[in-house]
Image 1: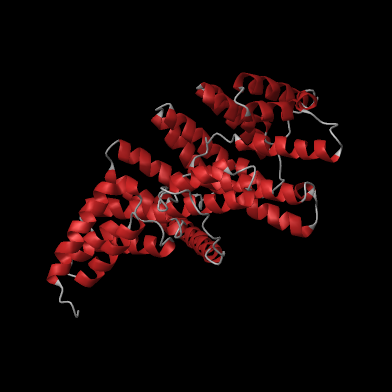
Image 2: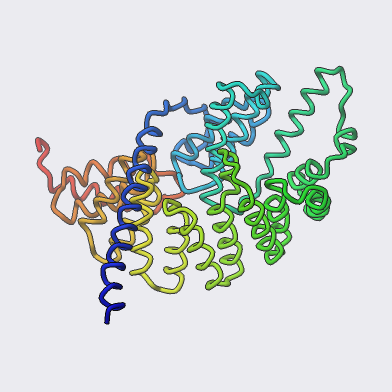
Length: 409
């Protein structure tokens, strides 16, 4: 009896401890989001005639076309691609590469300079790559090789042609060879070179994770998961901590393993890995999104709702998460709660078109015609042509609502 009576307050203490920890994490996430909101928006690049200026894909394609010749403008295009469709990883990764290329073009030694200003700017740029990885940890990071070749080309020009592509292939560092082979799509060679690099320096950070990524395009998922796990072992044996190491943090590695297992449809293993990511970092909201996605795949809407609620609290500036959480709430007929999430999504990213339409639906259903008119109008103005069916629906509904509202309203 003594042990049972002691267990109750102990459990309550643990619950309070977890609640307090989550509250602290949530406060930190909101503080970081407030800092992000202060970033100045770049100008939109002018797209070619006939291109849809509401399309994230159009800006992404423009950025890829001009990545090497106009990297600063390409970075702006990637920025707007991410604003128009915040869920995709590619614009974030593209902007990371474009900004680094722009720095290399201005000063090819800036990236390796160790002064405080460069460290701060490099960390800011690196955070973009991290944003890409938390959206899709298995993204093919092929632009790394573009950066490397641009760097060596600059050296070649500075040394009057002493470097060439042939010389690059003859560099003795197997880690560099593996990296370049991966970026060139030679995945077999990449795996081989990384194995040599690991054998020569088994404790070097990032080698196992890089080898894991080379296995993924070859659909060798078990090998990829094993390499991510080996990287976790390397990271656990070191106390070093930098922003770049976030790419291979314990939570990111567990998340990557979960994504591999999810791709294989090994659901139990995937859930375990995502859970481990949250054990490593309570604020790691992408794991909540992943668990919600898996719950929806099995029809467990209640579990998905709980995970999305946590993710929305931890990432209050992720408009795509707020939007999808709102959609889930609508399926449960929680219209007021859904409208609040859509409103938060609009506040987080006013250029993201999707939340405006269901928000207009809800306001129309509530008899708030003036608000419905405003949201329908905004959706029509912002929606890309790919949403033509929804645009037509919004126009018809807008016409109907306007007939109910006096002209002087």
